[in-house]
Image 1 (tube, rainbow, N blue to C red):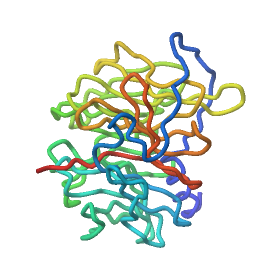
Image 2 (cartoon, rainbow, N blue to C red):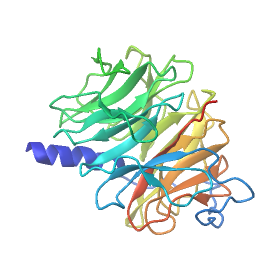
Image 3 (tube, rainbow, N blue to C red):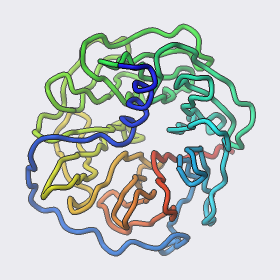
Length: 317
């Protein structure tokens, strides 16, 4: 595979995972109610915190921030390179993102106003899926070796990177639990994407899900008792997906959003009351917020270009 093709494939896999396999119908799933329009507070809800996401609305991909009560997001990177996948530090003072501005897809950090940009990795392999640990002192990320991806961890300044997984599969999207005792991730090591956990040193790797569909983008709830993830499958000739929530041990799995759309990439609000996600329910990928039962959806972005990979930015006093 040529180097350019590898980079394009890696970036594509960040958001547009194409699932194979059948559709396992789940009982008790209903259509989500009417989506509230952009800018609607929906009885005072809206986004109570700033929301970070990336978008193709500037004729290339950049990182944006949407503040509460505003309908027009601000471009934080505004760079001719491809800037993707923001992730906020627990204290809200730093934002990680991916960029190919140095020739390969690397991890960068900046302040929430877009200043003080620092390159944190510089390797021949593309880096993907970066996320701060709950204490803010380290960064989990994925390194792409073309035929496989592995999960790594490094200090918040980019030093002392070490590998946590080592196999021929694609191990991706790692998150550390709030108490620091486990890392959750997705892997296709058993034939299709499922949710796994492991210890912070990479030991004790355990599968939590086992279905014909793809279980992707898992993330811990703020109290560490639950896991939200996206389940993705092909049905009636098109890609569909829903957000689901299960207990931390894999029990009590339930649907949050309906299957008659394509919902992906959930992230919890810091208070654990809402989930932010990307969805095509209104025609193209936009950023939405829903309650934990999937009700009262609010569309936070509205643009013909792709908007997604959103997260909340904590605001500390």
